[in-house]
Image (cartoon, rainbow, N blue to C red; front, side):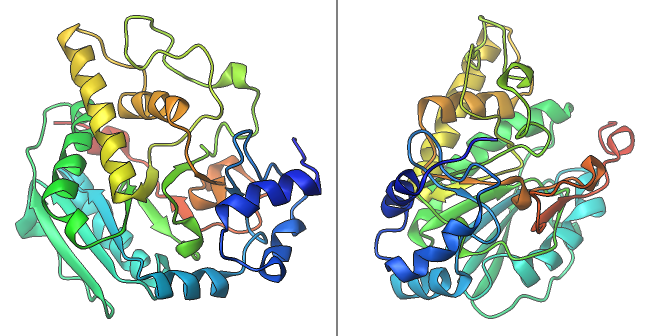
Length: 302
């Protein structure tokens, strides 16, 4: 556990919360049991550290809008997409304009979802690759392409999600930032020696050390930052392919390398993507997004 003093706390949040009053920042002081600020002064968001109404009001005034990208290819569409979207309607960025971008190889099978006001859904047909690893890695190019062709004209921010997840609590405007990364639920409390970075020097994802271990199931930021991340990861993935190299955890390995070189401006605690199989942890006071039951043997077969 790493604690920070009040001076460091205010220095961290003073930058991240420009425009917020001193009074509105007092709730951030309530968490002394967890690390709340990175070494480069980016906030790490935990329950009790923010006033939801203040964030929502500010983002509405600023005209913030969010694009959500999600891939539902093959059996993942039938198994997870409907639950993911329905739960998102109840919990994700409620009160802000949200545009869903569903990437799928079978758009005709996407069921009708009742959407709230200021919320739209677009389907984008993508190729189904024979290996799930290729589906995972090639999403970076698809995300970059749709940001360039569509999202940048309509949305200020982008969040990218894996489909095998369920929203269970507020995932709101407090999560918006220029570059947003998520602490992996299985690694956030472990020493760095256990982080599963790619250790192959031949890979562009190779890392000797890092700050945290980030989970590729959730990442986001301004459309410009997400486009840069997706392009950077895709370029490195393709260079690895040309050299007959595949990173240990595919796009997640490349994402960790990118975020090591380009520090995120906001970090989400594991509340924002939790696995109940981990069991009880006192620092997880609320869960906002849960891993859905995994059925890899069923879903990842041709």
